[in-house]
Image (cartoon, rainbow, N blue to C red):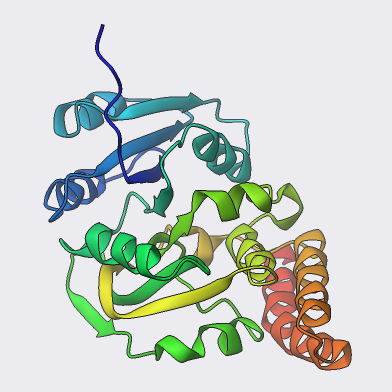
Length: 261
């Protein structure tokens, strides 16, 4: 009987067909400067050989299968439930981690016990892998920016599993904005940080959820509630929080209107 190796970081990777860049993502993980990580891959919907590809490139991966009718939030939370390491790194199947990503973020969390989530700047690439731009955001801007909009690239984050468990993970009330809503809730009890080096190559393409999905009204309401709770926790103006939310909602409302026509 073999024992499960002790890992420092679980890498949570949700994936669904066609996943044309999955192999690049997996090879990026295999190129990490540390081997203290374990892949938790959640295949959402039709399998179509995705499991075989994951097994070939990351033989010890934990693979979880989710029916197509389940939501993306359900998929993420199921993946979280399969993670047991101290830290959880998120990545998507169209992005590529830089070789030092897992080492840099895990060392940062080791050194900053009050930080519940650390993200990084990102290198934006197109569907062919060509660099579009590189983020230059300051590590000090993350909380200030979150008050206005989501300034954290979801696949760039590494979270303390304790912090995620305390907040009960992603909320089904925040469909298509589940990451932003979670960051706001985490910020009520934990510090959030950003590493200024770009540690992920973030692919921009036409089929991204952020480009094709509308944030529904119930999700916008969940964001408002999270904003107000953050303001209360930090003894800030709820009126200012509502104003920021109204400004954030303008493009969301326009997108909803366009989707109806």
